[in-house]
Length: 493
Image 1: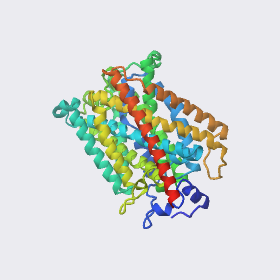
Image 2 (image 1 turned 135 degrees about the vertical axis):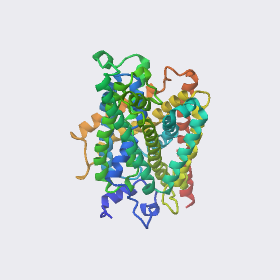
Image 3 (image 1 turned 180 degrees about the horizontal axis):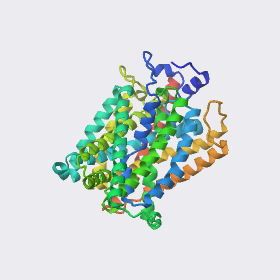
Image 4 (image 1 turned 60 degrees about the horizontal axis):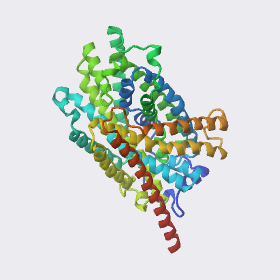
């Protein structure tokens, strides 16, 4: 065990309720620090990259390359720098929850955690739908008829979400292997796409024309909506900070792993999109199945059709791993909220055997199941996918408003010598956080508009706005109910 740091120990308990200490919730028989640098880099890869966004970007054509770069500059870079400094300042369990609470008080801390946690309710079915669509390519001739079958997508999502939940309840030291395997499974298909894309380009020429005109993003409103989707793709680098006390030497390991993972994420997105377009015209790319389609067509052209089932399996496995990683990370948010008594105390309890926040994990599983059915209601498989993505973008980005605002406000607090600061000091930190805040706000606004090919736009908008609004109102009610419960408890004590 690392030597105790008194200042860091004080920070650790600053977000807990009176009378509750870290010792009350830690496993006394085994250190909770189970994730090292390698595990953390792989965790950032699996949470930072989603292969479905490569397909989505390729479907938009060469201009998506410029949008990738813009999203990286205006959102990912401010986010990574903010997380780097905040996680170095306050390497606590709960991450975003702790930062928002420290900057703006109890309500902001709770709502940032609540919206981030609930954003994963539509995220899980969305990412698992994508995994299911790729499984069909393992036996394309026999299973292709299931591509529009809602029952198949629902059953697949239920089974895989159940498995990921079970692994994480057993423990992060077990569940992390799903994340690690998923990260490796993600690299291999990207490598296949890159290699085969260049092979196809060398043998047959590019399937897409990369010209100055084609690279300029369209400014039509429907096309601007697409920008928010690629911005959303760069989210995720904050997730590991939620598990600060389960990471070995978190103050040093998180920033180093964040930088390593960030380079990998950016290269995979941009180079992967380019190589899909080298192999396949954008008009033939489907946002649900585009990457595996590119593998399929390119493999046939270069004479390696046998690679398709393997690539399809690995793409599906990587997305199941991503679902498991997010499930593990965000369960720590209601866990610390339970410790603070804003949620029922059961959320702050650890499993008696495996020492995991099992109530938060099971609650998220149950609500994820509900969203699997709600997202599908009254629409096609494609329509359900688009609605789930839009709901995920809005609820997922609300916490980023808190994160960037906290980054600005917490510059007033002194930073110790061991804190990793944004290059340029407080002035630059405030500038990059402001850019991130504005980008986040614009992304939320664009996400309210339904996709152009959505057949029932009023229903889609109602689902997105109504679902997001309901989640925020429920969170507000839970917070105030928790406050009243805490006051009554204090009066009767």
